[in-house]
Length: 182
Image 1 (cartoon, rainbow, N blue to C red):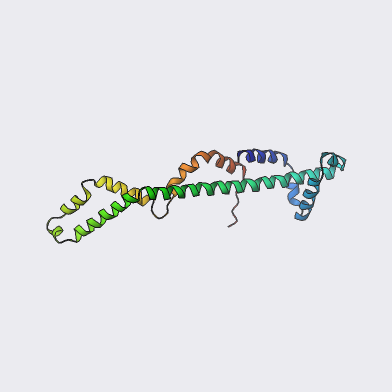
Image 2 (cartoon, rainbow, N blue to C red):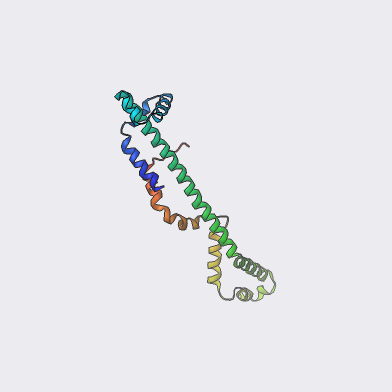
């Protein structure tokens, strides 16, 4: 992607007359681009200057559009890959902490049973203390961690996978103008 960004910057420097291309009809642009691709350097030299410059300008503009399209596809694939990696990390997290989650649910069920029992009315919190084993802060921390990753919420894992790609993303955003079609 870095190489394509360098290529895009080069094309941007070359496309000083791209406004001229925008004024041409799409069919003419396509015809000129096809014609320009068909010529080699010696053949281009034999063409009258005004037509040669027009063909060159159109070809540079078309190639820049292709580089932009390729870069955009690379960007989309890279973002998708990062999200897939984060989803996999979430699945791994759930798999690794399955036993702990089962313990938390079991503990919660025991707390509910203790509250429901008749003897709790006589001695409040005694049975609940036995269930939690006086580690309420650890249990609450585990619950908070589980809640943060519940419901397929993989966003907490994204920074880990974006970290090495930040500079490329910022360079992409510096060089490509984003437009919303919504």
